[in-house]
Length: 102
Ligand SMILES: [Zn+2]
Picture 1 (cartoon, rainbow, N blue to C red):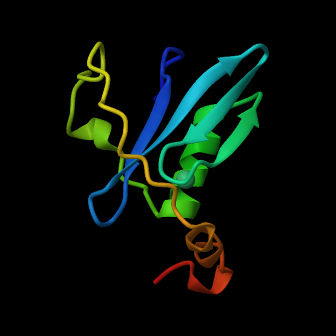
Picture 2 (picture 1 turned 90 degrees about the horizontal axis):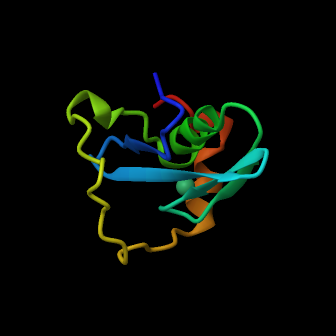
Picture 3 (picture 1 turned 90 degrees about the vertical axis):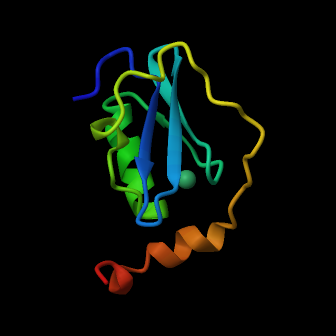
């Protein structure tokens, strides 16, 4: 269960790559930003659910890494700088309903 202090949602894809959606408070709403593809979304309710949906649909990232790591993200910010905006055709390809379940 995500807590109210969660500021990001991270999931791993089948290749073991980590995808992170940051959740920032923006007044009444929360704004979501995907580290992998630059996707942005505003959500008033359940921002973490929308983040998980995006990670699953756009990146097939459904593995919750919090099962294997404890609360090590407390106070240890990850080094930024290796963000490579993905082509949006990845996103479109994965939205094809016919290629949903391999
Ligand atoms: Zn993304």
